[in-house]
Length: 500
Image 1 (spheres, rainbow, N blue to C red):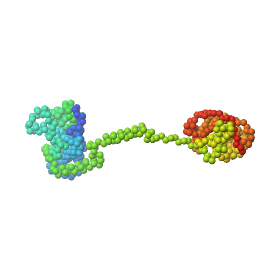
Image 2: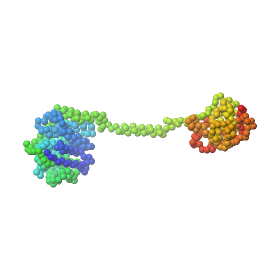
Image 3: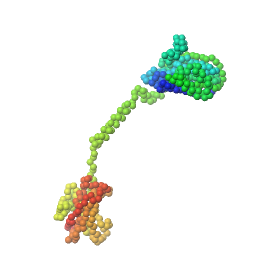
Image 4: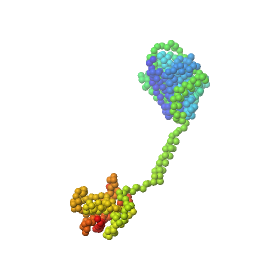
């Protein structure tokens, strides 16, 4: 069989969501149309679940398992019709189970119309007021009867056809999927011919367009089936867009051969037995529920929203962080800066008589005083020879920091060193630790040339202004940032004599 299928749907002009659902498969020659009901998007859930369940059952590979599900009607239905009936029954049971688990889905339901085509015949089922039409030999025939209150009243002749338009409860259904524990399904099968065209539609389509209007649109024979069905849906929307509108057409272009039976057979599959319902529920749990229970959050997805809890915890954490930032001093008190390391420390065995520490007021008298408890004093000492240097180095209470010459050369010869003298001028003193990091600096030290001593056996010293060796951080700026001439002052022309 060669088949052409086209479909279209529209939300209409009044409703916000489209609760219709359609599905078709050209290779499988299956077409399904469902019209959901229930509101709050539960109708859309019902129509999609029903349509997909029928699709899954129709293509289910294990026919023996399906035969057990339809053991009460297997001897009265052909295989294609049996698959459709079992699919409708399972869809009904699945909707009931979902509504029982989630109160938001309670009251949902859906209509159903489906057709499956073989090589030269077709089988169809329907529940509700979605319809199946057949266009053959330029004539339109409705193959289904609505399961609605207004149609039942017409059959019982309680109302006339001209009263249907004004009937207020014409949308009330007497049968639908998801509304009762058991389901009666209208099934039929019949032979097909080349050029047959089948139309499946929801009530939004056939309520807007009457049968004669539908036949007029089909008479045009648009070459492109998709353009034809799009135009028909738009025409229905223009006439009455108060409901969702869905329509699918399937045109047979070629069949394998003529069918043996040319009669159309209709059968109503009865309500399921208790045994059949047990098989159906077990099948649903094995195929659908088991896969979902692997996710532990599925059970509470609709019942308990967790996002308010996460929002509250996030807000609390943010408030704590802001509080700590504002009161940071209370939580993290500032540590006092560590005092810079000092190269020279007071010597415990330093004697007042030999400690090299001079006070400005005592320089003139040549007195030696005890070093203050905070450290000591610095002095530049000019020695005449290496023996005097060794004697100074071995003197108790004195630490020789460094020795240098004006030309920055090593002491190669004593005669040359004796002829070299420290030049007068302004100098800077810097102390470095073992890592060459500055720990002290004093700029603006002025040295004067001293007169020759009366006794050549004495050594002459040039005394700089008093400098404490372990000063406070305020008085010991970093070497790289201390400006020049931070401390200036003149040194008196005094001498200190140390006996050889």
